[in-house]
Image (cartoon, rainbow, N blue to C red; front, side):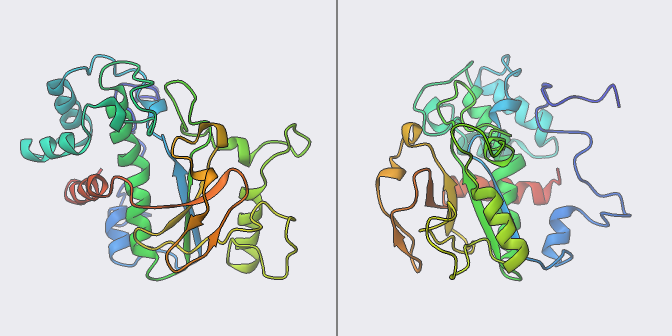
Length: 279
């Protein structure tokens, strides 16, 4: 165990102890278990942070060229993939810092050449693509809702990094400014009513979920998205939110609905490759 790579190792999120097939608890690859319907059919909330990969991409500073990036993908994440498949991933995650993570931060926060590129692909491999793969299957068999955490976006180099959402999960009730109880309320609602939304008889203003309806997840559908007004590059907090088949509302500050369509082709490619070459 002591010889295994740690969280901040060169291998990033390629952990030795990631969930895998042991033929006891996991009788098949987790992706295959989902495809065969071998999972609990219960209501689910599933989500993640916008920049999950940045925290795990701080030490790969020698991966600066296109050849380095291709070798990193092949050596760490896709050792069985052929050169054309590796090249397809590289094309889906270009070297342009404006396309990388922290997302929507232009060319800012490029810690080293390829940093934002590696951050983007690592975050999608381990978090966003897998989230979307899971939801694409289970939404057919049970109610499912999804969220995206985009607060603290202007944190240098990290953006809305992994675990930054703990500020709305664990902040004490007597903190100043007051905590955002959206997480608490949605989880309690799910446990009690099997739906994270406020019940219809709850008075307005009692919960941060007042004034917004969180639709069930569908492909390309709505995500409950946490944003900071001062660091929201797309200005989502300034405009009413329109969700097809849903509602039109001006949500509470810092809580909006956005569409789960970002990096669609790139994540679909990753999911196909990791079905072919299990992680």
